[in-house]
Length: 364
Image (cartoon, rainbow, N blue to C red):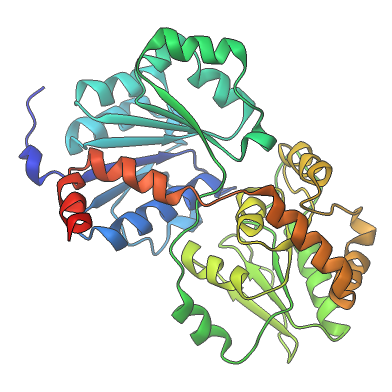
């Protein structure tokens, strides 16, 4: 297929995260990458394919193509977008089908696939997929996601193309000014992050329960910030110890996490991001894929996972006992998990044609 855009002027990257009315982990990851990429290279041109009912897409500063369903179920629309945009990179995040990957290859795009669940990881290690991928990145540290198996390693050697690596966490660029403007002199002791704000069919835990814990801990005299995701509509009453921040972008959330000592969080990406930032975490699962991940964090000593009825007391104990909190922070630091964003950007910069400029910068 002949490209309609001059190759040297084409800086397009198409993000295809799994998306729907509920859940926003994959979108948050891809938005963080887009933000970091544009912060470093304003010439970069991110595009997103998202479910038309994804409330978290509102206000996104990048072009969005709305789909009637999640991208995996919309091959004609996804393939049409690839053929129309002719991007240099297509990033599938827990989404995609074989015909979509083939369309990206036919458009001469580099193809990246990110998996954060066992089923998607299995799909990406099929030989017919490995031959279509440049990179298969496995979300979460190997200690959580599981090291590469012997059969997976053999497939990588046999396919002779795709590269696999683990992404401990991907941190958006800090936006300290946003949090300074929102909080002023308020310095939280606890930040509560239940996720995008919606519940999941495979879990009885609801974001409203996190809000109840947050309000109760604030009523006991601790300074608490509750992060309400785009789907969280329950009104909450703020006071001198309790603040509510809504619809935080990834960089603002990272800045908020950086200035607290304790994080009460679900078992998704934010848990690992907080650990990478060196924070003590109390984790409660809110979706069916999270209990095993949290249990592994507890086994490794990098998080606590009390029963729901003990969450408030566990947070209170940590905040009132410096020795207990320091011990948890030391175990977090010893885990050695790191921000994978620099490595991700290096790959994208090469694929988008920024490598030469980067080399000039480093030679000065």
